[in-house]
Amino acid sequence: MANPRRGSSERERESTNNPRSWLKVQALHALSSAKQLLRKPHAFPVLLFFFLLLAWLSLQFHSNHRHNSITTNHIDDDDDDTLANLARFKSSSSSSPIIKDTRGWLLDPVSVARDSALLGGAVSCESVHVGEIRPGGLRGNHRHHFCNETFVIWGANTVFRLENSRVADKGYAQVVVSGDEVAVATSPRGIAHALINVDPIRTTFFIGCQDSMANSSSSSTDYNVWKDL
Image 1 (cartoon, rainbow, N blue to C red):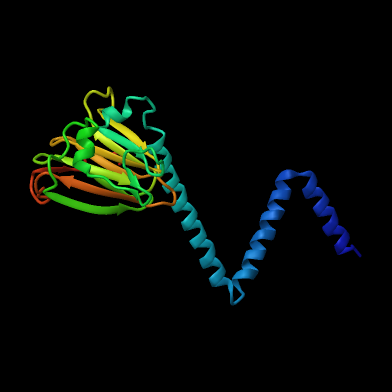
Image 2: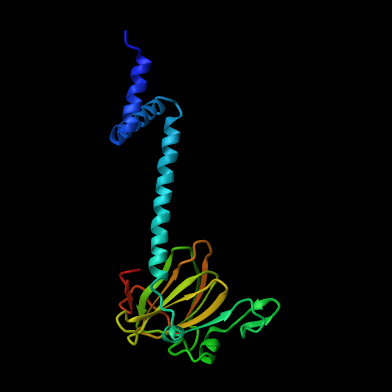
């Protein structure tokens, strides 16, 4: 009479010598284990956790891909800030012109833009909006035809993009404001702009100062200017 244990051992040795047979055996073992797991009462919570984990990993991958695709496309030349109508200041340096005393930084957007020779900024703050941009978020990506706008940006690594025909091939200038900086930027009427938070953790804060009331429901604003954002 044949010894079943001996036959099983011989099959395992044969499968080890044959990679395809070994993979088939391992797949059958995995399938058998999965079937046994599904018969148990706690199978549904385990499967739910597994699918939620996969969904979270997928979201993280797409978020990182978006983050990398934006940050790797910015220009690293010294003239970037000039092309983007932007001036930046250290938020923690005692020598920074926006640090008034030990309480921290304080500035007037219109005055700083003028003193920094930024062109096309708001001549006054007739309309002001204050907001935040959470990681991966976007604001702007539009063009106002009847108002100039000045921005203050701080809090997180943030991309500022400004339409500029002097930048060959792309037609815009794009810079990254780091989390330890405060930036003042201007966007003249008829020029598109966008702010994107590319920080994995921190929130971007900004102030937008316009020198006239922009009507978002009329043809005075073009939306979704850049299709890659």
